[in-house]
Amino acid sequence: MANFSETECCIETRALHAGAIPDPTTGAILTPIYQTTTYRQEAVGKDKGYTYSRAGNPTVSALERRLAGLEGARYATCFSSGLSATTALLLALLKAGDRVVVSEVCYGGTVRLLRQILEPFGVNAEFVDTSDEQVLRDALSTPARLVFIETPANPTLRLTDISFAAELAHAAGAIVVVDNTLLSPVLQKPLSLGADIVLHSTTKFIEGHNATIGGCLITDDEALRDRFDLVRKSTGTIQSPFDAWLTLQGVKTLPLRIRQHSENALEVATFLASHPRVSKIFYPGLESFPQHELAVRQQGSGGALIAFEVEGGVEAGIALMNSVKLCSLAENLGSAETLITHPASMTHGAVPAEQRAAAGITDGLVRLSVGLENPVDIIADLTQALETAKGKGAVA
Image (cartoon, rainbow, N blue to C red; front, top):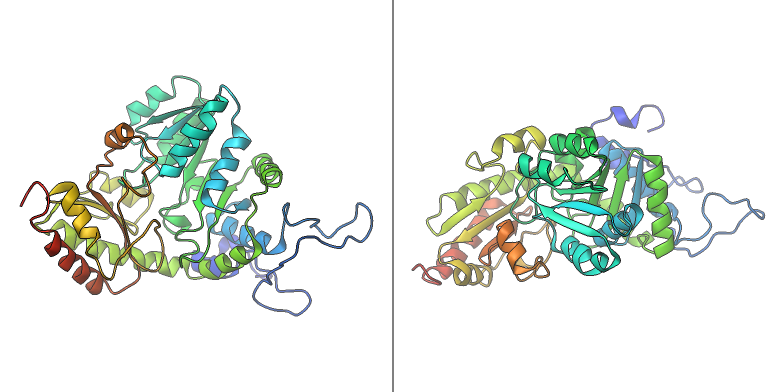
């Protein structure tokens, strides 16, 4: 990449080359796994950029350069998990008495962190429907330090207009963070839409193979980057070199995987939308989706996730999830394999029942992360599972 600008390259090229520096000793194309605790220093106060791997590690730095390049940003800071990245974000920006406005539909771990861990320290989190412009406007009529947006929202896939939200939040003096985990920078670039910070659970689509746990905060603001680095060093939450190395390998195929995920998901969603046993379906790529126009404008594709309900309610939905054979019942998304999840009891079990109900996360909701299998096979598996679920629940 020495002879041309990374920023001018297409995302497929950046996924392979952004921030890559051949090993100076051997010329190895792959970044080495620097599995070391400490680094020999040349003299007191003179080092080669690294002193202790809790503060920084060359393999982790290589991943940070790659992820920043994909988002078109200057800085990235990698963490041991998506939740540790969220924790660092909140510790870096909030203090007792501060208020944060959060999308009411968001990852259950974010709710648990704000409600059960930070609320006793005086942080006030208000969960609102950020997809509703008037609701967001009303929420920002009271001072807020941070606006935390998840779009598409997990698991209902409700969308928030990032440009509008950022304009409104900045006018109110708030910092804007967008959790971009469900789409990745291939489909959505929040910084270009006005956000200040992008959050990723790299565990999901970025690594993509169910092999690692990781998270990342990305920004163009040097002061924010320095603050994230300080919190990471002080809390000991840097990503491990091996997980960073595996993520570097996974991210190379991210653009190809995301596009195939999305193509497969549209085919599966179209099937589910026409199935007599499916009572509701939520997928931004379908024209019937209430925010389809925003999806086309903001993310360009429906993505890989589908949410739906089966006729017969909770019992029928559980029967479906217990009957799949190709799809895996698991708490994750974004992997090469198709995963099916019951949000109310799994990923969002920590969210209070009344908050789940207000956000549309019903007990019968099924979340499907469509993988890279042939969609014909995914549909065949869902067909037999839907047949098994027939007659279960309140509606026969």
